[in-house]
Each structure stands twice: as C-alpha cells, then as structure tokens.
Image 1: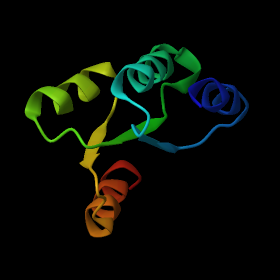
Image 2: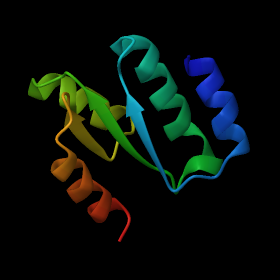
Image 3: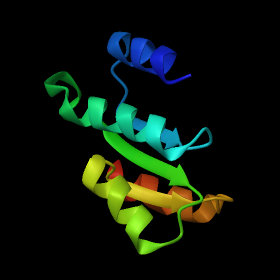
Image 4: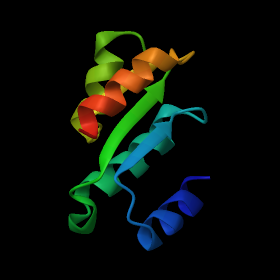
Length: 88
C-alpha cells in the first residue's frame, strides 16, 4: 500500500522509483505529489506506470511529479530506454 511505500521511501535513498498505478489513480497521485513535494527527494527520478493512454491522464501524472510515463502492459525495451534517459 502507499503508506508502506512512503515509509520505506523515507528510509531509502533510491535514484529511481517505478510507481505502478495498479490500485487507482487518486491514491497513487497523492503519493506522487507527496514525493515530489518532499525536499529530501528532489533528486529522485520517477517513472509512472499506468493504463492511462489518454494525454490528459499522462499530463496529470507528469504535472504531479513524474519524470516519465509508461503505459501498461509494459514494453521492456521502452522501459529500458526511459531508464537510460533518466539514469545516464
């Protein structure tokens, strides 16, 4: 759940987070905004994975703090390309 993810993220210092929006957009958006708004997480790159194929959904995720968006089902070559962009 997202509360557990936030607790784990407070203790860890990852370079990248793949945030899968499996459980609904609203709860995931709240977590995404919380991460993006935390000064200690400024360097954290976030890839949002969702079934949002419409531009409105994608732009909502990007405005909330995601650096990249990938659509489910995941294409692993696309994911690898995004990782190379975010983690040079």
